[in-house]
Length: 412
Ligand SMILES: [Zn+2]
Image 1 (cartoon, rainbow, N blue to C red):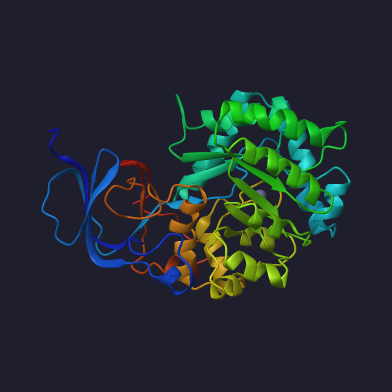
Image 2: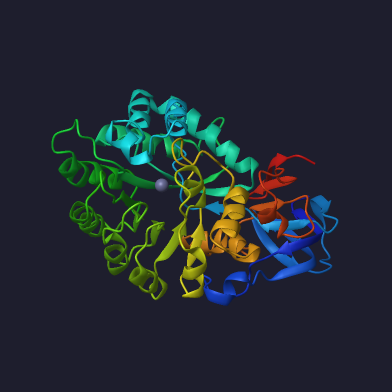
C-alpha cells in the first residue's frame, strides 16, 4: 500500500495563499488565491498536489462539502512557556490599577518570573504543552515561543530546554515550535549587573544551545532602555541572531527606528508608534507584528494597522499569548479584533496570520500556504466562507486540524 497517498481532501473551498510575493503588502495582502471547489493531496507530511478533480487514491479520503480549508495559523509572537498564574493581578487591574504601576511594584512580569524560576524543566515542559494544545485546538499549527520569564542564564536555559522538549518525546505537542530568546523581557532589579549578565552571559549560553535563535527585547520605560537594547542587539548580531523587538507599546523611545536600521525581522506591538516611523517601517523589510489581544486586555489602544497596510508595510498578526496582557490562545479572536479595532479586512487578517507570519519566522517556504512542497499543516473549518473566521467572536474550534499529514484535533 506504500504507493497510496496519505490524504485526499476533496471539494473544499481551499484558501491557498499560493500566489504573490512574500511578505504580502498593500492590495496583495487580501489576495488569498481561493479555489472554490478544490482537492488537496498529501504524502509523507507534505502537500503534493492542489487542484480541481485530482485523480488519485489515498489512505484517508475526506469530502469537505464546500467547507473552508486553510493553512494552519502561524502564531509568530507568543509567551506560551510560563508557570503560575496572574489571576490576582487580573483582579487588581479590574479594580483600577494600570499595567505599568503593577510592573513597577514588582508585579506583572516579575510574578510570572518568580513562578517560572521555581519550576523544573519537566514541569515547564508539561505546562508549555498544555498551552500549546489550546492553540492547536483553535487552528494554530506553528508557534513561536519566547523565553523571558527566567531573566538569568540558568533559568533562561531551562526555559529554552522546556520549549524545545515540548515537541519531543512522549506526550509531545504536535505544534511546530520556533523558540526565541527574550532574556531582555524586563529588568530584574534584585540582580546586580543584570543587563551585562544578560548580554555577556545569558545570550551566548542560549546561542550555544540553539545557534541562529532570534533575539528579542522589551524596550520601554521601566524595562530595557534604548541604549541597553542597542548593546544587546549588537552582541546578538555578532552571534548571527535575527532581531525582534517589543517596541512602542506605551511610549515611543526610538527603538522602532533603531530596529529597522539594524535590519530586524520584526517590530512588535506599535500601539504608540510615531508618525514618521509608520513610513519608515513601511519602506523597510521589517515586518510589523500587531498584537490586538494585548490592546483589548490592557488599555484599549491598538496599533494603526490600517495605516500601516495602506502605507505598504508588511504586517502580521499574533496572539501574544501570555498570562498577563494577552490570555488567549486564539488566532481567530486576534483576527476578529484586528478587523474591528485596526480596520483590517478579513482577507488581510488571514494573510497576516499565515503567509506573513511565516515570513517573520523565516518559514515562508515551508508553512503558511497550501501549495506543493509545503507542510501539510491544514485546518478544516465548519464554515463555507473564510470571512466568517474574523466575523464570529469566540467561535467554535475547527472541525479538523492536520499537522504534517496527521490528525491532531477532530471535532466533527
Ligand atoms: Zn510579547
